[in-house]
Image (cartoon, rainbow, N blue to C red; front, side):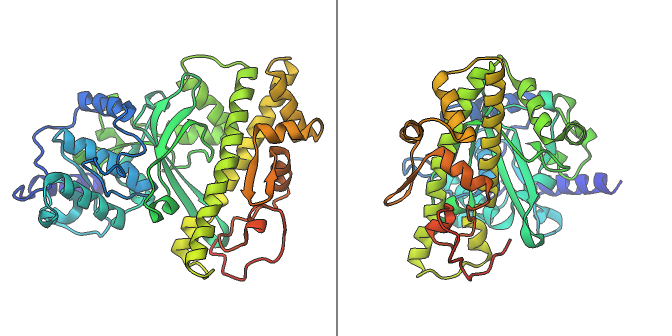
Length: 415
């Protein structure tokens, strides 16, 4: 009853808002047809890495982290199709202020409609995050209803009773059941970077209610039970029970096979995962360098919680380790059924068996993390599994990459 009352209150407060001076006037209504159009729009080339950093874009100046990106994409689509847009206001305000919505007259001074949209997205970024996105503005979706436009969120426990949260926007689903995702991070927001993209992503961190695969609620569904959402959209909590039943590893295997439209041999998976491991290992260079650049600007000042949260890498390092383990598993599978590219098999033997020609592995995927220091994937894996890599953004580059273990920073570790 309380949820129903809240839902009605949110909906009628949205309807009653004065449209005079609105960010945009909504002349259409959300429907199953518009949800299909949203899917197609997310898949299109319009949704791209430079959509907010290209000076020719009508939304130039939008600057987002992970949750902000999800809100920004939904808001832009709603604006361009004159649909209503509303999310729960975390301030707990009443009446018309219970939602942040397109009918607000707060941004009249921002200028034309497109700039008012930019101002709205900026306000959202300053007000809400992945907690709001996951708990209030989206609903859990059935596995068979995972589509482009679905958001994957997670929350994992970090040190000192803190948590790490993140959100990915699924741009497309690859034939073999992996995901093409577009997203941002706090560090990326710090440098006003273009959106980030991974075209072959396998998730880790299994769903744990309410975190997992989710889709946006329509304004009239804010605060309401799952039963109020059209069944065609796939509202369901099945993923949470399934994740508990199967465990993380088998759950994501199930997801991959459920959304795939074609099969993948063990040898093909081996080659694909080698490319992914190499890409993410080399990508860590830029993540670490972002922190080092910030330290250079601040004369190595200790980072506060916000900066530590932006530049530390515990979640990324965990994901990289998981990727190495997936590659190792695929190597064993390919070896058992005598499939796979001989070169990739030899690389895997060098990484995990510490045998073979390291120079060929090095030339295939060099990790040049500082001047005069280039390592191969085998060396990185050894350091990673021995937990030598530091995720602390105040540590020197040698510690960040496990080349040395001292001297550690005396700056506070926030988690």
